[in-house]
Length: 397
Image (cartoon, rainbow, N blue to C red; front, side, top):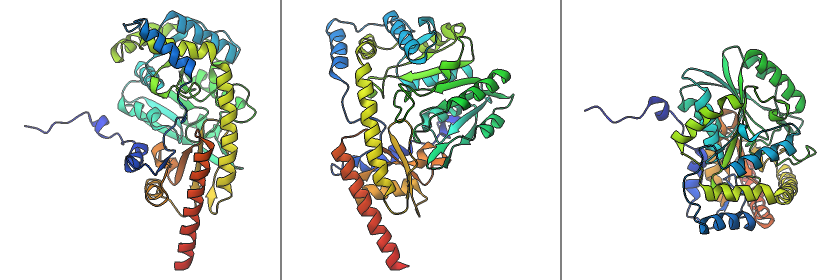
């Protein structure tokens, strides 16, 4: 009998290096944990209460594949206010989590062997999904210039050839905090329109702008027409502190909406109604909370980056959005090994940069969506560890 095997594409997938590091620190109560991408604050009470009220009312049955009409209309109205152009509920598809939105979008667009281009380093789920589907992935790396992450847009346009089926963009980016400039947005959109290339834009961090970008980061959805080959994916996880609820949405051209509905049926059937009711409350009542979170993250970003940049041998580009510091320490090139050392020697839990692609190797990701005291404690631990390692190395040199 031949050995049991899964598909070769699945067997070849890399396991999560964030999970690998986190597993090394689980069960250690004295480890400060900044490795996952979520706030340490629970979902706001008004959102939790809306979900519980729906449960008390017995709203536990199947719902429409594309989501409740009330929620789809609320998302469309939210996008109109955010992006200043028309959106219709017929373009909105509610999904069970943002990552499910990404999977369903790519299931609808990709054939085995298709060429996919991604700006990286980036959240691994975004780039592993094409590989699950048998597509060919091309990475275009960001680079650091003048203390910030930057995209060589000319290099990206060269990578998007007539054979490119899909471009993947995540802005603000995880883990770098890079934000796509408006000028680059126009050039990318024009180039993809000319070639007929689809764009999938992951906008989960769009409300978490940390500098002068206004209430949202520049999005390709702002410049697109309804029938452009653009799909927008989003989630309630980050801006509304709903990571555990697993609720997101897609913005799609109306002509592919029914096909997306089929895929939702065959993936998850529908999002739970009580979760959708909680998401509706988030949109109806959460604008001031989102703004408060954004200002808090800006202050925490500035605090963490100031301390990191003061440490010997640390390079820490300034993130423009999101909730992460992506930094590296001179002399350390194996990020998984370094992250595990920090757990063992400093009781500090960070995510290894290699988890976000080969361009992230030697870097570390620190989620600063945490209480100020915890951040200060963690920074102190890193500073002490870095100083002791530097002094030890100097002693032996």
